[in-house]
Amino acid sequence: MSGVSAITARDAGLVACTRCSRVWPMGTGACGRCGKTLVSRDPHSLSRVWAWLIVGVMFYIPANLYPMLITRTLVESSEATIVGGAVELIHYGSIGIAIIILVASVLIPIAKFVCIAFLALSVGRAGQEGAHQRHILYEMVEYIGRWSMIDVFVVAILSSLVQLSFAASITPGPASLSFALSVIATMLSAQAFDSRMIWDRIEEADDAARPATSSSTRPAQ
Amino acid sequence: MGTATEMTAITPDLHAASARDLDALIACPQCDALYRITTLDPGARARCARCHTVLISPRKKAGMRIIMFALAVMILTAGALWFPFLTVERAGFSNSATLVDSALAFSDGPLVVLVLLVLAFIVLVPLARVTLIVYTLAPLVFDRPPAVHAAAAFRLSEALKPWSMAEIFALGCAVSLVKIADLATVGVGPAFYMFVAVVVLVVLQDVYLDRWSVWNALDPRPRQDPAE
Image (cartoon, rainbow over all chains, first blue to last red; front, side, top):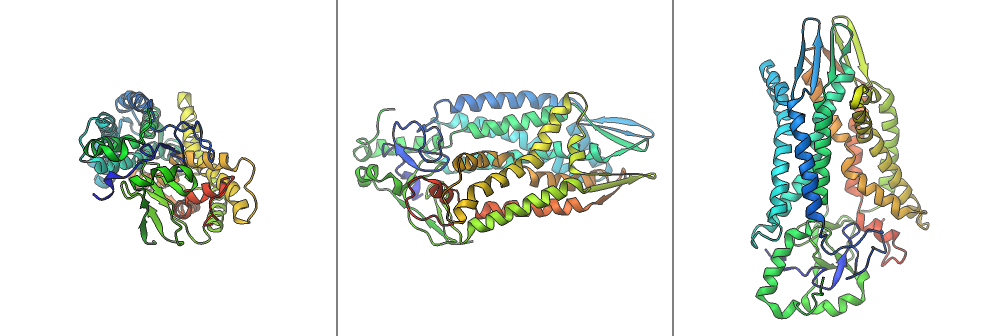
């Protein structure tokens, strides 16, 4: 990897704005261009990541236990949880939709919990290898997280659409709220992660390999 | 897509010089790697050599195009609000749902929180974003000084970006269509197509928006002419 040993703003005694990418001398309080509070590495980042992640997991449990959709037709009334609804869809033969629902509502949320926990644990602990892979993982988690909201929107669409008096009606169950809150908490958890920390271990290893070049300019935190 | 250019990395011996002209430097917001800013031709993109985040991506007449996309999004969203986007029929009963209906589906009990969330994610946040972007860019495009609080407006617009979920809602419509196909006869209304157009426009707008150019143009002491 050619660029792995890049000089960082911190190495140069500067602090970078993560919003507008302007650099300022280390110790500057707020970005003079966009107003963001400047920190070279956010020390509270990991606490916030863990806090939101725990909230997300907590809301995800009732989201799976309570019904997501309550369907009433002339002959029957049925309540379906996320997984139950997908199983029902498979019985009816719409395997494609069942897969979309299972991926968006079960696979992605759980994979997100695991990935965020892995990224937070790997900060400062992982070896030199894999920073780029972990960065890609982080970007995927940030990008894909929002798509879990699809199940909430489907519930909203179905509930407003299927109000056909006696013939059929669909109402949202309590799981829809806790699922939405779980997705929001997990998105906030991913946003709280300071991705610059993924790369820090590499620089420290690099510095150890060639202490003469960059030790002079690293300021005290 | 233009050619991808890698930025000139700062070498260790440039440390002393770099502290003096900070305007000429850019740090990758994702991995903190430091680069010297190079002027790019429109269509070219500068990526971080280490984590490949796009740092600068100027495009010709980007400002004007973004404003046009934003105005189109506003008109289409307003239209999509009032036309039905899906219609359903079973055993002689029929119903059609507008976006507002769909958000109001949760209106009983504690689920009222969801009304606000869904309405915000699919209508209010996208509309707020395009409004803020027009407010920020319009003075810059017409070579006037930035509007009052333009930096705050652009900041808010960027912060709202992950919470704008129009495209997810559009896919949700498609899933719903199939999901209730066996329960009732379902049809697509005009608002559905308007919504698909909004999704395309929002994506295009994002492709043209070069954050660095905007921030540079909003800077009280700009380093060089923005690429708008």
